[in-house]
Length: 198
Image (cartoon, rainbow, N blue to C red; front, top):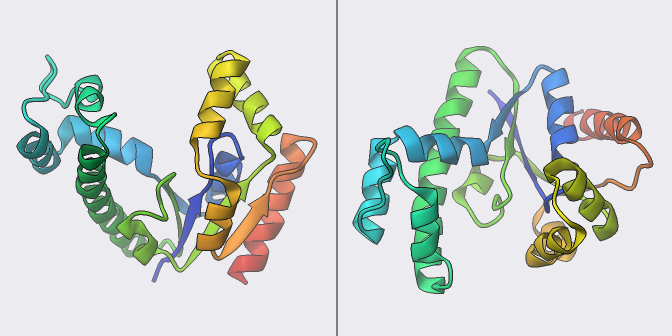
């Protein structure tokens, strides 16, 4: 039986650090963003479902052209909702199969990393859920350093995301990243995992 931890929270808060600590405990990590991007390129059933909903979307390599898909759905709340329904279902099914495979390998722990964990069927897979949060200024600095973007753009990304209270209300646990160094937060994340998994 695999204990599944759902990890969510806004960009730049420190989810990756917590995920690394799960791996250090021998756990598997499912990055739902990476799963989705891989499925856009290789998963015929998802590709078919997207084209059935939104029309021709292929790029030169035969995968789904994400920019073309974005142009179709963004700015249209109905189409965006339809996209999320299709994608959340497909990614959740794939995550479920990965968790089953980890169980067969004898792994007892897995973490599901998903920005839209709360809104998707992934929640049903999780024994417990964790919101990783950090002060907005800290997140802006991290995003700028990580992605090489200017401060105004980083702030627009931060402001576009759901407020902290949304994550706190819907998750079992909250891990606040208010540490002065990455090492300090790694230790805090390690201690936190030991506590919630005991």
